[in-house]
Length: 527
Image 1 (cartoon, one colour):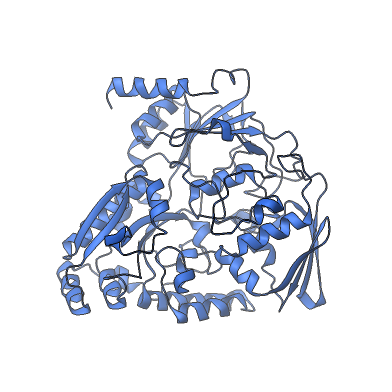
Image 2: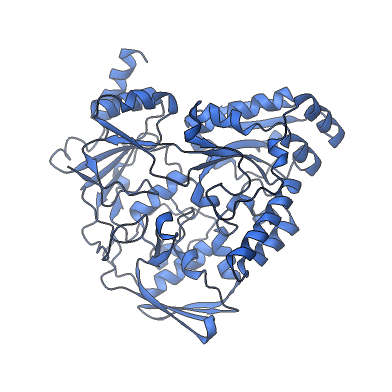
């Protein structure tokens, strides 16, 4: 990077509004993975929105890390009682819960929030399908009447996978779940400073003095959430070299996802720590649109499986250091107890691009244009996109590679129109391992047509197996069912697994208390 470019970028960071007047406060400057295009944590599965959501909102239950078995524990809830042979749950709120506008958190706020979340989220939909009624018995008690026992209820309400069950005031939660909320009023440890928002540049959060942390030890999203910083600033710096230079010079404190080529430089000098804080990894995938040709044809989707070389994708993302990625990877990440080798030969057999070209012709591909959306401002997803587009060209596909910003993709991917009318055919993305760990949370595996995640696959068989999974009596039965789900997924191909990679985060060495599973901003302090 040229020196002039760095100086200009540095000046921009230092001159942003609020920095001068916040000089006497404890300020944490953070570089997120991408621009925060969507504020509403219910409206999108984007990881950057999930991170924003955890700053502003709290959840009824938190989730511990893998060492403690990903256990759902009370967070806003004081606890719960289960009655009527598992068909009635009564969740009691703990004392001292207050929204950022000063209003007390009431059970009816939680009921409205659960209903809104349950209309959109994949786990939430499964919960709501099993509920006869969710109501507020009084100001502090949420009552669930279930059609049949559902022991996973706390897991659903405390899921870490986007979209989180964010608790908001009833008046906001009554908003149509398919329309965005822009007023950010939660009860989390930080409040959103809408007056300082500069889209594409700066987002600011201020410590909420009314937040009452619970007791215990911090463990992923469970336990106390103590805000040690008065102010959190998110600085959007799309260029990796600029972000790296800003981190090394101390102009920013934390860079969420540094690129693999810059990791050796960041590790030198002792001023920056480079650590893997997400042990479940990042799950890469190629999503296709099942509504329009050619990917409305399952035979075409199956034929393209033969062109997926997961090692090539992972090398493009994280380099030759195989400790930073894992393949083969099926429809559940290798670290999940639901992982299976059923059908993996579709990804592990020798790649033969000429054969894939012939198989595509036999399947009915006739040169239709593939509108491929690729994020220019998210390096890892950009790398996967370049490999995917090149692979498609090698097997004879007509690729229209459209390089845009991630915010545009987040907006455009909901467009069901044909590619000629502003729609799309394919894009690459990634989820945290925890977000695809099981059929309960893996939103991209849902195959319920028009109600499915962007791409809208339809597979009655996958949906039927998923329903059986929720009612499975034990882990062994769940594993048998997920193996069957994976086998069917290799037939229907709702998406293409590209591998699992471990992207370290990088932060200044004077920071401590970084909580795994994040980025989270509670319990972080400057030493």
